[in-house]
Image 1 (tube, rainbow, N blue to C red):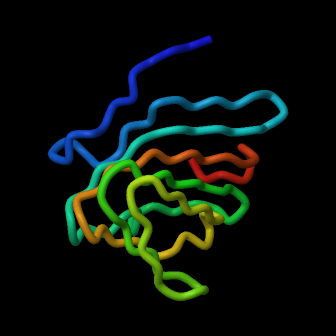
Image 2: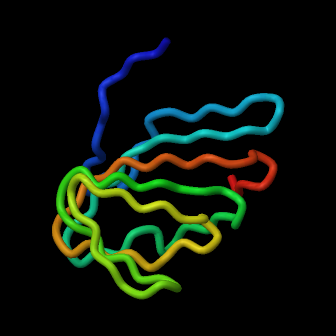
Length: 112
C-alpha cells in the first residue's frame, strides 16, 4: 500500500502533477494526476493521446466547459466526465479549476 497526499500544481510551474503511474508486464497502464487551470484557459490542447486509452476527469473546484461530438456542456465541482483520449473534447475553464484525472488503457496503445 502506498499513501501520499494529493498535490495540486502551481500554475507558474506547469498545469499537471502526475501523482501515480502503474504499468504491468501484461501492458496495462494506470496514471493518476491533478490539473489546475485559470478561467479562460484551454485544457490539453497540446497533448496527443491515442484513441484506446480512456480518461476520467473529477472536478474538485471550479467549472469546465466541454465541447465534443454530443454538443457543449459544463461540469462543476463534484461532477465527472469520461472520454476516449483520442477523441478528447475541447475543454475550457469557465472558472479557475482544479481536477483529478485517471487515465487507463493498454500501455502499448498509449502515446508516451
